[in-house]
Image 1 (cartoon, rainbow, N blue to C red):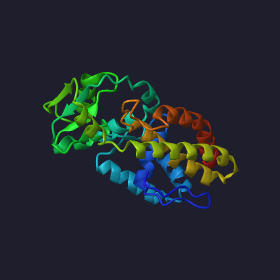
Image 2: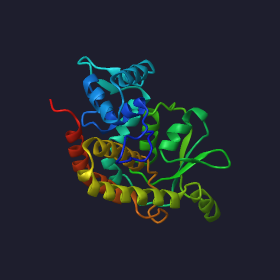
Image 3: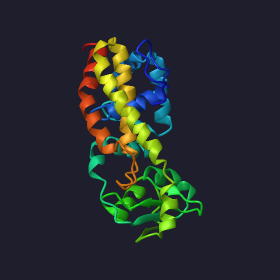
Length: 261
């Protein structure tokens, strides 16, 4: 969500379209009615007209669709991305022991975003590389790339090994220390927010819990799951259970902020 850091004294500056996508991301059934969007928008000081216009724009862009019962759900590439994000709880089970093998993909501008999502990084030589550390290996990676819209003709391969100097250079493609610091900061924010939500006004607590919850979901689901002996601490395996524990307070905050039926 494109917001400023949550401020207990007032609503963060939020784009209504981004808010809708975050609401759908964090919703149990990944859908929302017009009334639900309006009620949630009010928590963020967004008018009913702003939320309606944003939903209509997302529909026209092919990013949302309306079901037979009138609910909004994500569609197209956004639906694929959101489905992966909602599987964040499974992230901690996806990393496997690294045996020194790598996955390689040819350079293709149309595939760049999907490769980034898969944890690949582009080398100076112009191809994409990542350690083979995710359960399912190359075949599962190819399946996810195709699901994301990458043509099956994209050249991909598994490399048994790189020499020592090349391995060190390849490892530098990821900002490992930066990712560790980001996870550390999110853990601290989750702990602080868990303690403070109950003392905040209902709307402020709801705003903070949605903004922070969605940010942590994206951090977990987007983690490249590098080899354990490279990765900086804390690991994503520590962040996921912290978010799981935050789910209860987050739900309570939203229940308190929304109007009673």
